Length: 116
Image (cartoon, rainbow, N blue to C red):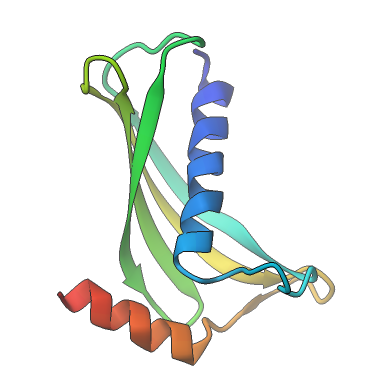
């Protein structure tokens, strides 16, 4: 796989994780999105385009506007760790083009889960 393929797979995992975090729902406002502010990817093992992979995602921290996520990509057959990505993200208003504060109700719930 080339770099673009890895980033694409992490992107799909991130979208699923955003749903798990409760950031978006079917009736979510389309003017709000998520922007990757920073990402660091490490590659450990080669993966081929037709390899089965799975990604486990973990919320590391939530600030006022930014939150940090860690993704681990595994080879589905061998269970070997093949790549990781640390990402810093923010909620983003697509109309005003500005970062938004993390919703306080979700933030409290997620911070409580982080403490467990």
